[in-house]
Image (cartoon, rainbow, N blue to C red; front, side, top):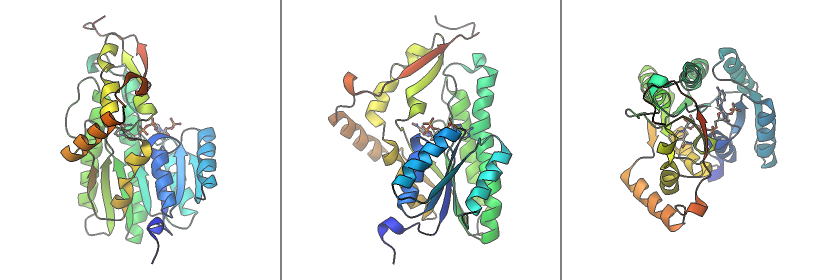
Length: 285
Ligand SMILES: NC(=O)c1ccc[n+]([C@@H]2O[C@H](COP(=O)([O-])OP(=O)(O)OC[C@H]3O[C@@H](n4cnc5c(N)ncnc54)[C@H](OP(=O)(O)O)[C@@H]3O)[C@@H](O)[C@H]2O)c1
């Protein structure tokens, strides 16, 4: 029998958007559990650097540039995995947030960018992985949820609505694959201290509303390694989803972070806010 570190030995796993943040931590975790991992993002340089880091940790790893909004890139990523012999786990992690502010003045290009990565990217990943999984009668597909997957979030409509879509899409795939041996999971990691949270763009006049973000992250933020951890249980079970937002988790983590001093100004996550001009007639500046 394999050791606890070996539960994924012999499996090949793809994680999209895995050169930093949660995706990198997920790939690293799967690799340390014995899986051969395939990394990807839109930057060749970052892919090479991330591959080198995991290789140095003894993980069997390869990578390629892949923009999940481009079907051809995602197909090539699948082929890279299959060239390792098999494809067993596919994590649609690549995601991006939109400009903070009202929908009525949201830049159209920005909304399109979020939809392209969060919605189209998740569809593309599922569309290329599932035929392989169905053909072999097994495989684990994981889609990453996020804030808004259960309901509306004002001033973050593009991101939040896209995550609601990801939830419904995932639950539908689960129905469609029932009885095939293929397992479809959703994972909401909760708040994770990554570039996505630390570099925010706001419509002018709404940036002051981001003031509380550092406090919220101080209370409930997790390291990417901690946030990635439930992934192993997901891909070794039939669980439909991992939910971060249980009351016990929130209270425990909040107390722990307060005790660790993460609410103190000096210990807060650095927050870099870029303000862009908006054409919103009701803007507050
Ligand atoms: N951070 C949080 O608190 C939090 C909470 C809930 C859910 N999530 C979800 O967790 C996932 C990862 O978030 P994160 O915080 O780790 O974000 P992050 O630090 O911004 O990292 C995002 C990763 O995705 C890649 N990426 C972005 N757009 C891409 C595209 N079109 N095609 C391929 N790769 C792309 C990025 O690399 P390039 O830019 O070089 O391509 C990077 O490697 C997202 O789905 C996010 O919605 C995050």
